[in-house]
Length: 376
Image 1 (spheres, rainbow, N blue to C red):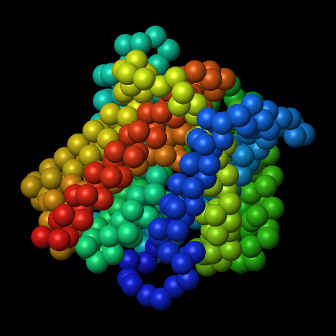
Image 2 (cartoon, rainbow, N blue to C red):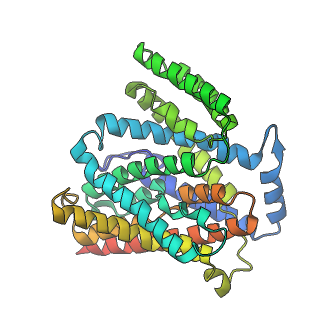
């Protein structure tokens, strides 16, 4: 989810914006293939095997994904301090678009699935954008997509991440251990003090992050939130060094491993009844319909009212294409779905079908619109 320069400079293939998205696609494809093969039983057994205090699946979702959220927090801080969100004027359009792009998908989901008992809890599943996929698809278009759209999509995704972290912290926390939470607050205060006393080495902050993760895990708040909170205490210059050091591990190990552990869904029983399932429909329509309506509508209103101009050099057709790409939820949608319906295998499978279907539609439609708009 790290910002990629929109300029066309020579770089190794693995450093291109599309590479991380391709790694995710391959990992998800492997998971789906194995889940529909004779190896399916072994796949489930390995994921649910106990490895110390957590299962293998929990180590991936709760521990490794905390490192992913650390990179999210580092990017948020960098962009707020000296990047695309550094001024109030720069924040207006991305924040409004991100807010609408979370609210409208949630409303679409609730309209289709909210009346079914037990499904209301999944309202946030279609609310978040997977920037690795979205920027990757945009990168495949090359010069057909103006640089202003790439910067705008990155800024929207960063604002979107802030909302997703708040949802995870507030919406999916069952019970709080106040002692552990107080100790976590103490660690955060110590990390802030390190910054104010001029500490610029990376290791004290990484140690603080590890301790904070353990305390947040014990507190009942989802442990991945520790990554974002820790990142916000780190000085920008140190944050950039940490971000560059761990980003390849996140893009080519942690996120593909998460996709491999969470995208595996059996397709043998999928038919018209599955596609009419309120949970599947709510998630897929929230991503494909809700995201484009919310983001495109917010940009149009902001531009027409003079609140914030649309991205420079971009036609309305191109803006619609980017709004479609924002409907690629994948990583974040699967993650929130796992929190919303933890332990309910049938509903988790329905979430996976909805996320994969909605994200695929958004990716294909967004690419087609932007390719056609660029050709014109």
